[in-house]
Length: 320
Image 1 (cartoon, rainbow, N blue to C red):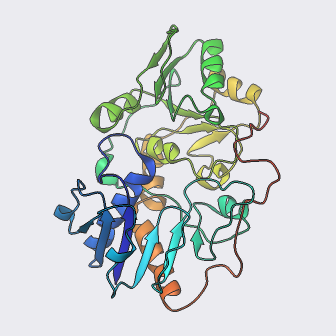
Image 2 (cartoon, rainbow, N blue to C red):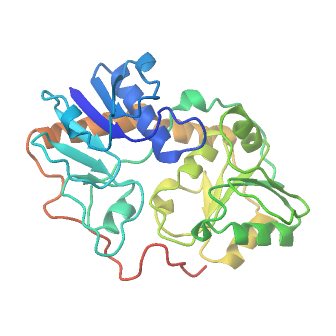
């Protein structure tokens, strides 16, 4: 199968990047499985060592670079390609009120799909070669925040508040502060071994978001290192977390109580096994190949155009 992707920025990404990493891992896995994978992308991309053919972009108009014999185009953003080649779109975020998505749009979880009037989804996944694991004993003293801290929907504020009230420690990857606080360490955006080292110094991930989270890549990243997740109940989390891999809290009071006085013991090995079974890139790519075959055959993944079903915009803070 000849599969075409398009991305404006260099791949693989040099620093932190959620969508870019998933896109690159997926292309690598498809090439490993024997597919003809083509990236129409930034000329500084270094993907050919992974058996991905690079067609350098020479401007914003890239349609003329699409090979005529391509079987399918897979985009990671909402766009209509002006050609007859079948196209599939993965929506990684939330749409805005009034925004319309094509019938062949794939979502990240069932809840994410429902929030846009759809029902076709593929769970995000990791290239677990980049997440080596060593079993460890988990205590309940040091916590991890892994997200863009300045984005209010990610709710770093309540993490800091609850950790301070519980006299615990917090490692923040993805945020900074002009006013350092005792027992709270801000690391900014990190990737690679430094990021893994800090993750492995923690006992659990805190992720009390206040919006309809499409997926929560940080959750499976933390779980890949054997860390349970303590989250709010919004968005996709009931699909990603069960009693052996985390705790879902319905409000701030539950969240703070869980941080202060959790009685449940988690097994880091059990959590890692769960990620290997459910969120490995080989499964992700195989699921997409099945969808490619459906689209290439002429099937529409949905029978209607799709859009955000809620009245309020997705970035509006939900009560927690």
